[in-house]
Amino acid sequence: MAECPKCKEHLRLVDWKPNCPHCGANIVVYDLQERLMQEADAAEVQYYHFQKKVDRLKASFIGSKLSIVRIFTSLIPIAALFLPIVKINLSAPFEPYSGNMGVLDIYNLFDKLDIGAFLTAIEMNSAAGLMFTLSVAGLLLSVVVMLLHFLCNMLACSPKGKIRNYTLDIIFIVLVAASMGLFAFIPENPFVSGSLGIGAFLYLALVILNFIIDILVFRENIEIKHAQCYVGGIPIEEYFEMCESGMSPEDLRAEMYKRLTAIQREQEEKLAEKNKAKEEDTNG
Image 1 (tube, rainbow, N blue to C red):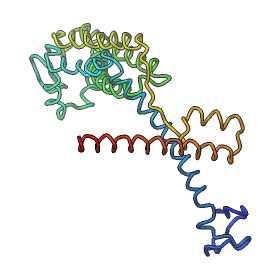
Image 2: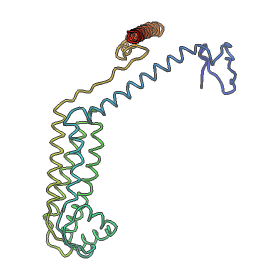
Image 3: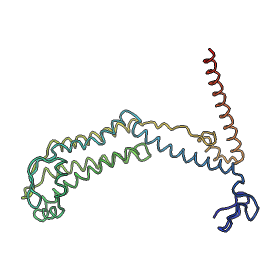
């Protein structure tokens, strides 16, 4: 429920008139300037918290040369997937295929993939079928983790950014290495055989490179440069100190008017000097 800004009495839904039924004050215009100042103060404090997040994001992406490099090393592993990942021979229950396979080949065969085929393969040869299924799943999950890691780079300078990135880096490496190992050691079976291609090894190398760059970036301890924010002309850090020290709202508002008046006077002086210099250039 709303309340009267003067007497603080609660207003009912039927109290729609501009004057308070309790004290008669005009609710709309009573102490309007102060209420607008309070809303402005709240907006400036909210902007300060938002600006801190923006500053952390900027530092995460472009805070140093290495952090800019990390943008590319976070996504470049996907380029290796366009090279031959494996040389593979597939037969029933899978769609017959023989030759090198990269991400484009996997995409072209995606609509022909059937989850039931993997289950059938596991029934035919539990070890081979399960290893092949987990190898494919590991590869697909690694791509998801790569994209997730790239997005989390935006939060790298947040309090838990380092732990988050390192966790994703380790998961990324484990998924790629496990996928490669499972495929390389698939036992003999009637439905799949093959060997790892150059793309797989390059993929793993780029994933490890990404982890190394991540470590180097965090070792730099990038300094987050926060833009100075103000509340009523008072630097926001000083404003928080005044609020915590128990300064009364009246004294705080008086200090704000004092600071704002000083800022306005300074701006007027600069404008006058600028206009004077312009007139001298014109007359000279």
